[in-house]
Image (tube, rainbow, N blue to C red):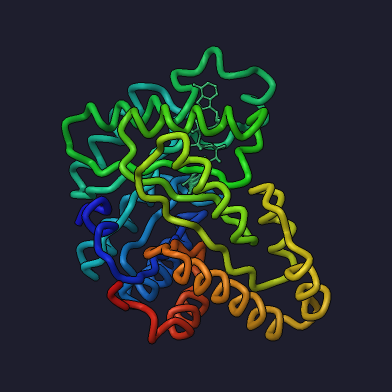
Length: 294
Ligand code: FAD
């Protein structure tokens, strides 16, 4: 099912994100974890491409398995900045042949080499170029793009970031998924600004349940997200107690999701990564709300 159709459904839902294995030997255990997540019947599962140390060659295997064996719609991520035009063309064919209908088109993070040399010699400079190619491929993909409520770390300011976001949407994005954020007001503010700028496609907020203290630093370094004092206090209090920290992190994410639902968001994307227990707990916490027809 295309996510553009799914997102029109006027009922509360959750989607989950998983990442492919880092090594060939980890494939079976990662596959099992992603299957357990699919068994929770989320609205869709997204599978990252090379992010979080995952091996990009398995993105399609995992996405195909979730779709075919569990009947859950999947969203396959694809990055372009470290690839040639020929490689991307091959990947697009592979996605098409795997029967995946939804693709998240990303630039990808800059490697230290690319940061030094710049993008001048690369085949791709921005995600919009990949969006355009996917749209032109004739495969009829439903294409998504990333967006940043707290602006992309490389952007000079929000106005510029939103201007380029609009260009990306105009290249063919039918929906956007946000970077993680820990303060919902940042999301509401961002939504107001992009709507004012004329970006009308659905925006899926991404929420990351932080379940251990070490994850906070990593997540913040990766995303540049603002950490509210309310969240810092929780880490101060429970960080040294893994079970309590996990429970508190899940409760914080649940609270964020309830507030998003209460303020008109229908689908929330959970960066539960390959943790079926975390995904299951969040789903359980929302059990009487999920499926609620608006
Ligand atoms: P872009 O849309 O190209 O934006 C990158 C920067 O370039 C921004 O500052 C933007 O304002 C600027 N820009 C855009 N167009 C122009 C232009 N024409 N001229 C000048 N500047 C411009 N990474 C992975 O490796 N694998 C994944 O699976 C993955 N999944 C992700 C999913 C989500 C929801 C998010 C939010 C991020 C994900 N990432 C993933 C990380 C992503 O690759 C990085 O954040 C990357 O730095 C930017 O990717 P983008 O697609 O947003 O790039």
